[in-house]
Length: 188
Image: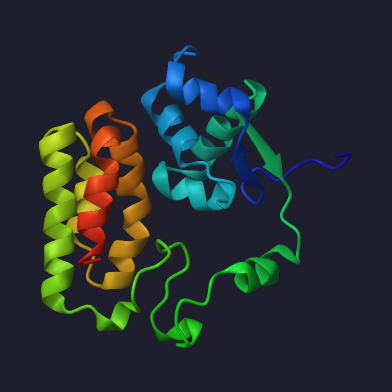
């Protein structure tokens, strides 16, 4: 690339070194930098990842550090990437995109409007209780706050990725994540 890469617009994916770092923790990354590395999935842009840190300057510093250490690779977004991603998304139902699916929501879930207020309450409680019991009370206060204040199924589905990353970043949470995800998906 001969042009300067816009760190907030670029799409990030983990390199082999990044995958190794998640397993070995050999670079001694700070918890925030490690969390961002865990959240990098080849689909999120720097702007998307900035939702997990305070301030846009912070995300640029974190992504710059991960790039310089070879943990992530950045790709400039192409204008064709958005329509191609929508076309590649599985058509789980005949419902139009505006009828309840959420960008960034976990795949395979029913349309959000089919979930009741009771389902949302159960999903909120499940997410909060799993964080408190596995990771520890008062450890993910901002995430618990976001989950508690999520008013809709779509809001909970958006927060799901941060919940999943928190679970995956903890030893016991990572072991139990498939089981927890299955239980959560029944009400999410």
